[in-house]
Image (cartoon, rainbow, N blue to C red):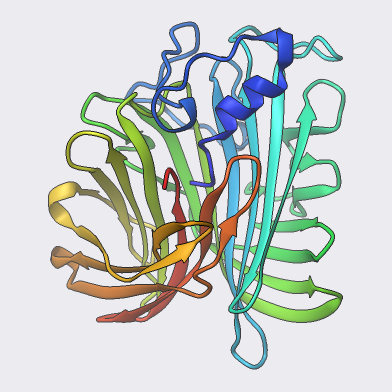
Length: 357
C-alpha cells in the first residue's frame, strides 16, 4: 500500500496558502471528509491503459512497487519505489504554477544489515513529476518507472530507477501474468462504514538488475509487485493505521492482506487470494488471521516484525519474519516497510508495511 498515508497531510502542508490543512482524522488525515472530491463506489469498469495514468477529481493516489531480490549467493534484498499524487482541489488541473497537484516520491533499499530510504517532493504542472499513460511513465526528478514496451500491455516490460547518497538501483521488470483487480472487481473496502479505494495490482513481475549499496554493485533478481490505488477518503476517523502484506508463495500463488487498526474496536481485515493464473478470491475477516508474534524496538517504539498468518480455507499456516527488523522509513512521515521471509506450510517471500505505530 506504500505509505499511502501521511502523504495527504504532508502534501497539503507543502501546498502552503493554496489550501488549508484539515484537522487530522484517521491515520495521517486520510479519514477527513472529502465531499468535493469524486467518491469511490462499487461497479467501476476499469479501462487500460488509461487507468495506469492519473485520475482527476480524486484526492489521493499512488503507484507503488516492491521487489524481493536475491544475489548470486542467495542474500536477500528489498526495493521500494513509490510515487504519490495529492490534489489540493477537485477541479481540472492546469499547466504551470497554477496547478493544484502535489507529488511525493519514496525510495528504499533494504538488506539484512542496512536500510536506506529517501524522498522527493514536487509541484505539478511544471514537468518535475507526473504520470503519462501512453506510453506509461511515472517520474519525480530523476526517479523513473517507465514502459519499454509498445505492445498492448504497457506494463509488460518496465524500467525502474531511483537513488540517493547511499544507494541506487536500476531494475528491469517484465511480466506475462494478468493484472489483478483487488477486492470486489477493483472496489477495495477499508471499513465497515464503506470507506474504499479503487485498487489493482500487477503481482507477477519478475525483476533483475543492479543495486548500488555504499558504492558496491550487486546483481540481483526476484519477484516484484505493483500496487495502484486511488481514492478521496480511504479511511475513517477512527482508523489509526494499518498492517499490509504482499506475499509471493513458492507455489506461484500470491496473497494481499490488510489489517486496518482502529482506536476503538477490532481491526478491519480484508485481502485477496490470487492463484497462479491470476484468478482471485476475496478474503474477508472470517477467512484468515494475522497475529503479531515477536516485536523489536525500532526508532523508539515496539514493532511486530514477526507474524503468524493462517488462511484455513487455503491450508495456509505460515510464519512471516522481517529480513531486517530495523527497516524504518525515517522520512518526514515515518513508517516501517521492508522485505519478509515466509516459512511453514509454504515458503516464499513478500513485503510488509506498518503505519501508525
